[in-house]
Amino acid sequence: MTVLLYSLLIGVVAGLRAMMPAAAISWAAWLGWLNLDGTWLSFMGHWIAVAIFTILAIVELITDQLPSTPSRKVPQQFGARIVLGGLSGLALALPSGAWIGGLIAGVVGAIVGTLGGAEARKRFAEAFGQDRPAAFIEDAVAIACAFLIVAAVQ
Image (cartoon, rainbow, N blue to C red):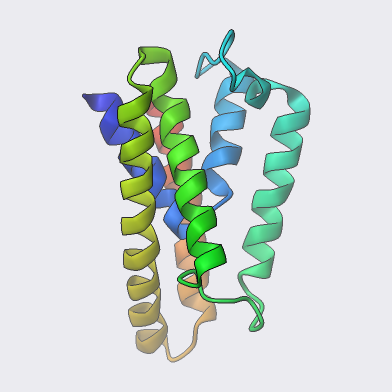
């Protein structure tokens, strides 16, 4: 049951920053915290996957600061968050055999994280009078939560 909670939470992180959970899971698999050996997701533990997902997560953190970045609620952004949330939830639950529940929990978490994250960021931006501090807070929350979730699964 705990793994489903972690799957839900990693989905929420995907709603905040789509690539952050994939990077965290890749690092966890590479460090041996998450055993994906012998599964179709075993590639995530390879150093090349770690590098690619980490670079993509960093690029996302940078591009999120640009005024031209579309809303996370447009179909392409929302869809990517749902897919990556589901995949991340599945990856966390795969070693325990609860991958279907992990997939569903990750998708639900991604929807909650996308909508809730957008609303929270809007409110923080209004409170600060600008978006950048709100974005940095959201970045910090996504990074910290992703790390704590994958560290707790080991």
